[in-house]
Length: 384
Image (cartoon, rainbow, N blue to C red; front, side, top):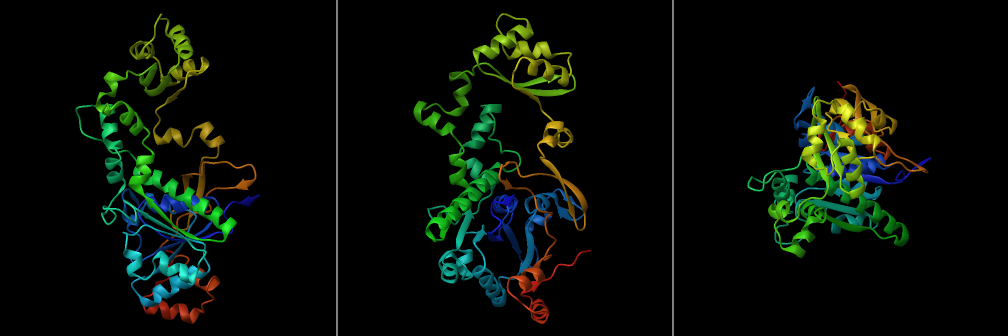
């Protein structure tokens, strides 16, 4: 079976989580993603936790990519990038707005080189607007979208806002960016036209906050929702002897079955919790599953990566890193009946594919590559 994006080449100038997650999705769908790092490397390489000198987040977010080093502060490094633009389909960058323009590599510059280029500019606040030049990270977008306040309100209406785990303000916008790039490829297939894509974290996080409509229509702040709009049914985390389970029974029919299981006339969360006391997670889970109540253990990662269903869905796969050896990692989640998706390999070491890319795509000789490295325009990675 074919890979969906196997004829697409992406120049990846991203760092942190937002951009690399987007380009990892493109790689998993078959695109050739060339990650371009400065001589000192992507700063995400040092993000904790670090394993044997390499960030585990870098190792995950950059799987399947080819890694090259280009010094874009060097005129020759810029020229090499422009040559790569001629033979590429997509550029993804998440520098501060204006940075690429100062290098002469903004959209208006590169479309003169390749009119069909799709140029995705990822940022906190977008390429336009009063805040466009302000720095941002996931936490900033989560805060300004109202999500942090809402999350805090769910825990304690009188307490502080809370940030999400795992930088949802990066990963959610990263998916929007990947979807938009694939859509722009489809548009180019029909029209022959490339285009600029402006993806802002704040815009995406507002789109991912449907509760905004609830406030607009009712005027009730989220801190008061628990009192004004009591939840229907039974939902929450039930404590068992050896852990917790998530339980969600929102409908009358489910509640009837749950009441019968718990042996009460009218069921609520507290009665389910009392029924679960003295039972193990597996005992509670099995009982709830038998009566078709949505429930699941709140697992740690040790259980996640070894579960029979997760493994049957091929969601944990093994890749081999040239320096770190075999690693178990999450796989691309979507299954296609006629296409192949999935991780193509590990994250690259710094400059691992510089020589390969310059030789195969641009036809550079060994002597020219050696000279460029001596001049500081490129760097060749060497395995330990």
